[in-house]
Amino acid sequence: MYARVIGTGSFLPGNPVSNNDLAARGIDTNDEWIVTRTGIRSRYLAESGTNSSELGLIAAQRALAMAGVAAAELDLIIVATSTPDFIFPSTACLIQGRLGNKGAAAFDVQAVCSGFTYALGIAEKFIASGSHKKALVIGAEVFSRILDWNDRGTCVLFGDGAGAVVLEAAERPGILATAMHADGSQNGILNVPGQVCGGQVTGDPFLRMDGQAVFKFAVRVLAEIAEEVCAKSGIKAADVDWLIPHQANIRIIDATGKKLGIERERVIVTVDRHGNTSAASVPLALDEAVRDGRIQRGHKVLLEGVGGGFTWGAALLEF
Ligand code: ACO
Image (cartoon, rainbow, N blue to C red; front, side, top):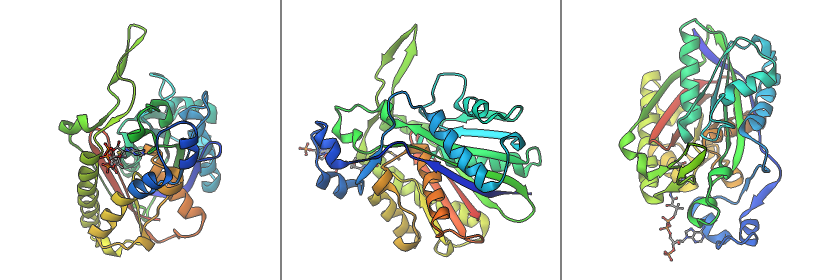
């Protein structure tokens, strides 16, 4: 039994915020620095009070509408997020409640920017085992809440948004292969090392990053895991129709495409307009390319993520 993507959806809050807009807000930066180093030109930032569950809900509703599936039919809901509305209940349960579904298994997955590829791999295993038939997998983030807006080295890189897919059990492909890995010894190069304790935030509640260490790690593991899922499926990386890598930085994306022999025309890029939306970046890019007609039924699509932990994950699917 295969898990087949039958609907995609996404949502970006408000209006684009350009690099010049950030400079005008008092951040000591400029468009040239950000574009040259990252490829990012703008991002979307949720208004205060708008949470991951609200972004994820709209993305989910759009994916369900494309799939022609009613929320009541879902038997599995997984949300990938590192910016949940609450410590608990999970963002998945909040979205489930607003969708009006009762009874589906619902839980969050925390693998930072790899979260969506982890959640997709988990959902695929539920469906392939025969235990579940219709799954909603969402990546939703409000990373703007965990940024130190006085740290120009990180705050310019991220944005808010959500993307979702609906999966259905099917006899034809389908997700062909998935992989997920982690190396916890690298937890220090990208983290938010704060906690809530005794009613107080203790430690540092903002995102901290060693940018150059992240860069090197990301390029290596994105190439490795792409080769891994291709080998599992018996497909050469150079033969996939579309590569959708995590949208962190155009230089990481280009280096990965080059290592895999996939030219830029077959790589879906949204980082220029969305920034890095962490767990939302891959499903946002997938939805954009499905809706604008680049990704067609039968195409082989390679999705991959990498993020804090460190974690990395991938899925190769026939759309
Ligand atoms: N605007 C202007 N100048 C800046 C900015 C900014 N926004 N940020 C930093 N600078 C300055 C620094 O202060 C420094 O100045 P100095 O030389 O006078 O001290 C100079 O630019 C160089 O700073 P570095 O941090 O060394 O810049 P680097 O060339 O390494 O680029 C970057 C930083 C873009 C973050 C790079 O390391 C990178 O792309 N790393 C990958 C990290 C990434 O993509 N993370 C996303 C999250 S992780 C994930 O999703 C997997």
